[in-house]
Length: 195
Image 1: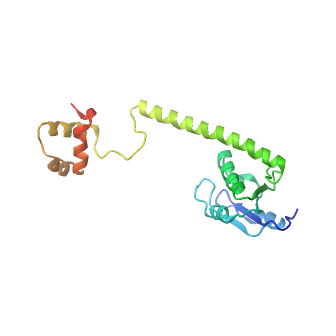
Image 2 (image 1 turned 180 degrees about the vertical axis):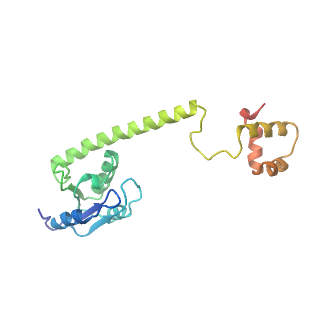
Image 3 (image 1 turned 90 degrees about the vertical axis):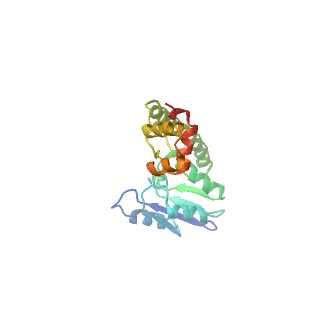
């Protein structure tokens, strides 16, 4: 089925693994009148997809963005919804050749977009919950949950705090431990470094 004017059909093709080629996708997109076709040769696991970002910048009201299959566009429902939402906000529609229900130019497709939005929100909440649980487990086990790696070990921090309490100056301690004076100074106010 060929897309008729005045719509501009923008194709998007992406390979998911090294060694795959775009030829089949390009042929299918060209057959339905896509021009231009944005070609991505990077894995979808990478957030930086230059051609997709370029397509999203260039899409205009009345355009239709076409993919051969929805998994060519995104790896998760959350990502798919986010991308399709950006297309919709630009005044364009989205269509997948393999999944007839994935056509936001139809009432059925718009309904599926709404359902997809709900599923994306559930997926997002599940990811946030798993992340929070993982951080709590690490913290309970005494591990670090983010931020830069401390420059000093806990033993060094206690030793420095004791030396500061004994009257030693910041600058010589900073030189001894190869850290800034500010790092040493912060240990004066950290209650957990007190002996």
